[in-house]
Length: 332
Image 1 (cartoon, one colour):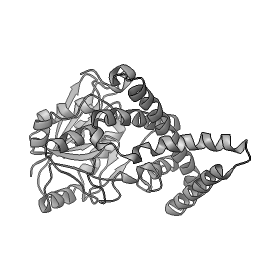
Image 2 (spheres, rainbow, N blue to C red):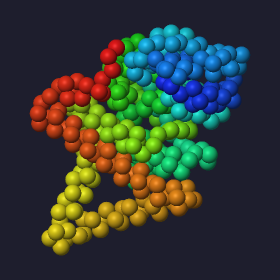
Image 3 (cartoon, helix red, strand yellow):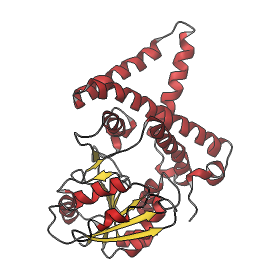
Image 4 (cartoon, rainbow, N blue to C red):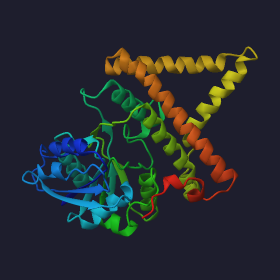
């Protein structure tokens, strides 16, 4: 297989530097291509790309801002390989990444795969806490690549691969964001293409966001899910409602305390203690354990509130998704 990395970047030259440096250290013996798509950045990264022209087979494109999905499509249109590897610019690859991808696809080929995210010891306490919230089986992040026991794995665009055939048949990512990756996965399934998880093809996902940005991000995730449920009702799952039920349970628990029934809030307190203990033990840090409480509660409330708002507008008020949430759709 001939691999082409396709990486959109928006105002993050420092991130792309770290990612490209990790690409120079791949153990994979065959040549591979790297395509960087600058998505209308006001802080361009071309000077960073120039550092790697002698080390990597790299091509740089600058285009107007149209979102990550359209930028990935743009890069895949110009890619020369027969299999495209999609990464976010805030990822760092372990040296064996491409070797593991090639080994897995050679053993059982699929036209689309996804890999998990991991963290480096150098990550900040907040980054480690957010990583815990986004990957732990104790949260809704547990299905992001920790287990193959999933009927149909939905690759996420921070770390995924798609064949040229699947890209050309599906026309790639849609203009919704976030949510463009599960949308693509479902469309591929409906066209007969298979997806799978490659557990060994993990990336170090260096999320550079603060608490407010994290809440906004997961809130958008919550808004997108009812839209996808409306578009593809056959793939809707009861587990998608869990964050919304978490939020409603908190409000119910508060109301119940006025009637001297505090057992609901006690359960939430117990869950919070478990989060703290597990994260503290895993990360060997009381500070990360404390931050993980903040991250998990922001994750549940951000996603849950977004889900409730979207469900009300989409299924109760019967609004069209683009009318209800125009900010979730890029104009291409």
